[in-house]
Length: 225
Image 1 (spheres, rainbow, N blue to C red):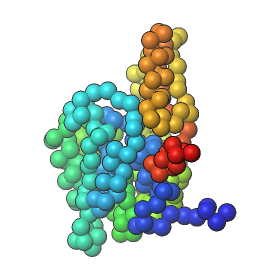
Image 2 (image 1 turned 90 degrees about the vertical axis):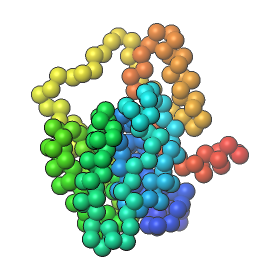
Image 3 (image 1 turned 180 degrees about the vertical axis):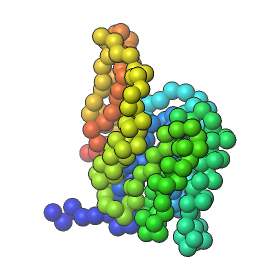
Image 4 (image 1 turned 180 degrees about the horizontal axis):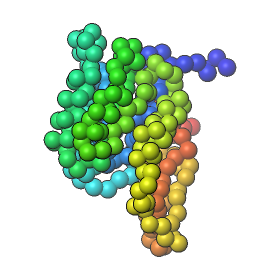
């Protein structure tokens, strides 16, 4: 199909890139972790708060979803690399936001082009911070469009989060009244209403996720139709 083409790096389009698919869809609902947009400020600004996600907590203390963290690449970073800058940012995050439960590095197009070793920085800082979960996500927008970003982010969860759980007791304690809401787009916050109703009748909503994440422009098209 003619419309089934890749996004062009550097061009904003209604079809999201791999970075948007990772940061906005998979990692977006994870509010107690800090997500660094590693690259120029524009990508982080474009994705900042573009997805609505239900969460509790105090912004800047134990939840960080409505904040933007970026390495703000400049020309010198493209030339000399951003590894040291990324490590410095992580140190600042640890000092300013000590209650964060982990950090992800959402790589943008230039990171894949210049070859920043985000994996090495993440491993070193995780060890320095007593085993804190730090996840490098190779989701450069030039990789492909948003769907691939979903898979890249899911693979990062498997490789950098689940492996830390080996041998540790599960912190989650199930009950007979647990339910999961799956496949709700939550276009206008309607999934939050469903959650409230289920909780009022005595159920516990332990997970709430959507089947996919349409772009903001597609939402407006449906509203007009």
